[in-house]
Length: 400
Image (tube, rainbow, N blue to C red; front, side):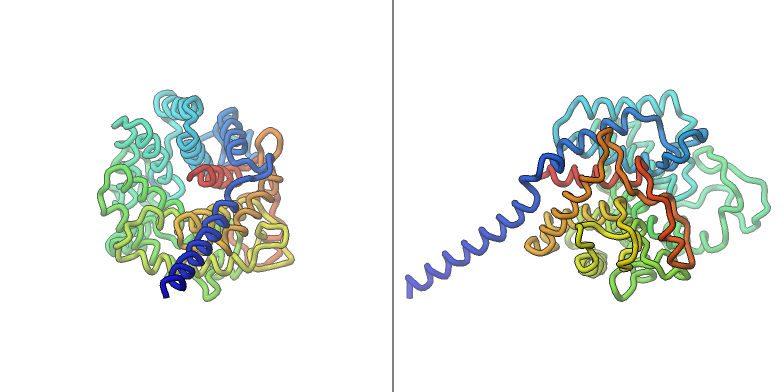
């Protein structure tokens, strides 16, 4: 009996070692061109050598810069994560110096806290605070986090009122503030609620960063509740999301924002938080469908569940990051999802130009009412919508 028990124990240990090895092999021993450290450095340096973008697009390079836009924020955060994880002090210094110069000499480019795409800038300020511990960065970041849940002074039902200043001195267009925004605020949700898919990255990342910075549970609780609202309102039976209620197309990058938003929130959300279960349920439901819609090449398509669409990199990198996070945290079976993420990362690395630009990034895309709208979107090279999630992947792959 004792021999039989010992045999069972040995078999169990052997199976466990195979499982651990499978996970390890998925995220190590990459081909040279897919080395996450080399890629992370290349993408970070490319970001630093370029001026601030206009919504990440190389097509808008000659437009005047009016503010820092969210693709820069997302790329900047990814570069900071990567630099810290790889202990690249010189890279960290360059990224922080760029931020210092922005708030001291380019202050006019700080976004007005009047929209989800603008407020996410606060997540960058809070990341700089977390890495430097300088109070002015924390204060700046919390202004953006707090204003996302507090209606600006001057809110009015009348759409034709004269624009007024908000609590931070930014001029707010009275047209922006409509009755439903006050309704959401009164219900305990962000007044910036609008049910666009990218909201669930812009809002959750900012509020999660605020929680990380000051450990006040109001930030994590309200963003988790917000995520559940979006999941209940937008997630389809397949686990994917339509671009809009009246646009029944599962656009890749839109779904990517949701995937990353859930993964980011789950890795920070306390285990006993009341909203964790429904968010995990929504995440796993989406991951199961992504497993089945990955193209034979290893990445995903412009419309996720349409096999006739072209393969697109920004949404694919977002899905890859979300899967890597899930495998590393034990939410996803590493024997199934580890090879999926590995194949995707290796394929995506082939889309990186020598100078660090990423190819086949879908241009900015508004809601469309037919599949040709999505099929005919331009595939850009060097758009920061592609650089950012590739940096997130590089960061996550360098973690133990």
